[in-house]
Amino acid sequence: MGKYQLDNKGKSAVTKYHEKNKPAKFDKKQHLEKMRAEYLEKKQKQTDK
Image (cartoon, rainbow, N blue to C red):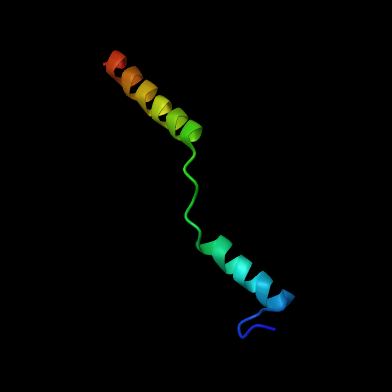
């Protein structure tokens, strides 16, 4: 056995820690949809004036 080998409980704790601290994945489709909605709102406000 290695010096730093983990049992199942330790492995699950490490996995949980890394999932928690992983940066959020950038979703391009969602971002484009958000930008489109903002643009349409802005355009709508301009035409209402």
